[in-house]
Length: 77
Image (cartoon, rainbow, N blue to C red; front, side, top):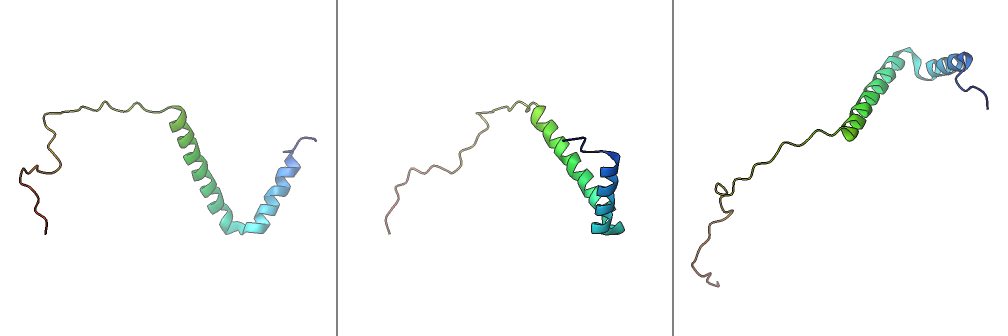
């Protein structure tokens, strides 16, 4: 298999894309492709370089019970 991306191959691909999508859709497709690649790069950067999580401070004395505790027995209906 020879060189896949020779200049003539790129020209033919450009002409085919122009014929398929038209002049108005090509800039939109390029913009969408660029935004997708940018998001992909940011996602890869986030996976390979995770930011350290801030330390969580636990204050046991300030924690309030979720529901008030009652010592009265529950009467059946």
